[in-house]
Amino acid sequence: MNARNVEASGSPYPSRRAVSLFWPRRFAQHPSDALEGGEGALLGQWLEERATACRVVKAKAKITVVRTVKAVHPVAQQIAENLAAIDAIRFVKMSLELLRASSEVSEGRLKTPVTKPGHPTAIGVSLIFHAAYKTVQFYEITSATKGYGSKMVDAVLRALPEGWSGVVVMDWSDGFWKRMSEKYENLEVV
Image (cartoon, rainbow, N blue to C red; front, side, top):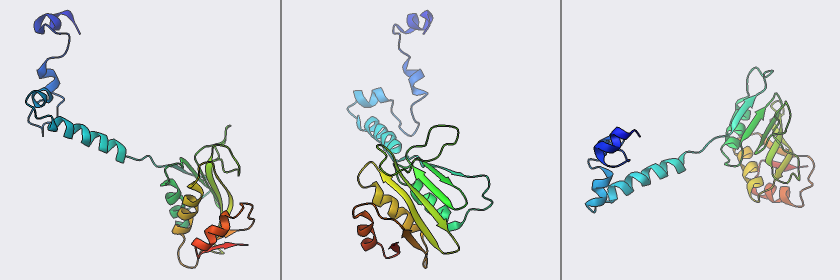
């Protein structure tokens, strides 16, 4: 702030007129009037709306498709969108028959979502997609935070249309897939 503005107003802070330029027009009063007049509800309402708007905005995961894929199958697209809607999932990568989603990516030139079972911090799933057989195979799944494993399974199985099924070939989970197969009819544990 320059010396001329300080001399004119006697204060280093912007004038009421300058602040009024940024105050929303739908509120007739200036924030200082609302506070002085005992009507702090207008300012509180405005602040509450801004805070609510910030909480509602949710960043979706980044969905990438490998260049060799000419057209994405609609079921694979729906699975990717469902997985991207989970708040912990930040990266989804789709190839011709493989779909990976995770909260972290590997280091290096190729950024691959981390789905290695037993990873200390990652939350992710790796799926093998067989459109000809109408199956989605759960290849790898990891969840460092309790509850996200079932959310990922739910997101995948909700996207499957009638006649499709989810398949688990090897169960090393100590009962996780058994509980999931009891909960979902379209999940087969081999």
